[in-house]
Image 1 (cartoon, rainbow, N blue to C red):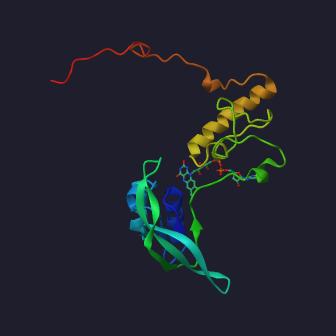
Image 2 (image 1 turned 30 degrees about the vertical axis):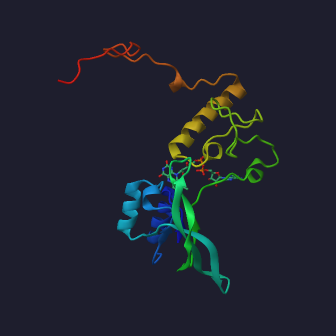
Image 3 (image 1 turned 120 degrees about the horizontal axis):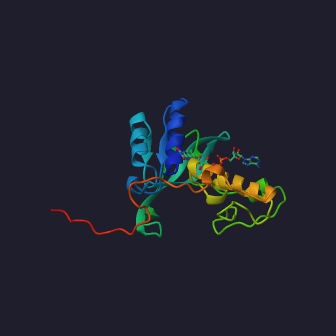
Length: 207
Ligand SMILES: Cc1cc2nc3c(=O)[nH]c(=O)nc-3n(C[C@H](O)[C@H](O)[C@H](O)COP(=O)(O)OP(=O)(O)OC[C@H]3O[C@@H](n4cnc5c(N)ncnc54)[C@H](O)[C@@H]3O)c2cc1C
């Protein structure tokens, strides 16, 4: 069983199937319409054989001889809209049911464990409990620490992490060598047949 409704949950489910799991079910507490995963990913997962259990949230692991045997699930319904614009999952009084499972993968978000990575250095965190940095150069609250990627933004994407790495590299270079210009960041004049800085003008309407 994979718990979650995002792209990471779908990746985990498809990978589990490909690694030989006989059956994989993604359990999500809302419905298919609210899943944050890309629609095509969900469809591909389904085509590959992943099953879905919507409106269900795990409440208890059922162990047999110390091993997972099943997961007690709570049926959910949808309530009012929350600030993400999705309807809030609310426990359904129709109760609980049990789903057999011998492995459970939680794909319900990521959090930073500052004590494990900061090694005794005290760094400020932002309001989401990730590392607070200067967005221009990735410098953290200790001037010799630079950070970027998921540890700063929370779960994001490879390209965002690479961009943050480049910014931080430039910031570190400036910190150590006094200048931080990355050659490909230097402004270039682009040769166009139009003036890219000109104000927009109203063109002829349709018809
Ligand atoms: C299942 C899944 C699927 C994803 N699919 C996509 C996708 O298709 N496209 C996309 O763009 N993004 C995807 N992402 C997001 C993407 O993986 C991340 O945004 C990206 O990897 C962030 O890069 P990062 O360098 O910040 O962190 P990471 O890639 O997480 O790298 C952090 C590294 O630090 C190491 N580390 C942790 N603690 C310590 C420590 N104390 N000491 C030393 N090393 C440590 C970790 O082992 C890890 O190697 C996916 C994420 C997941 C979980």
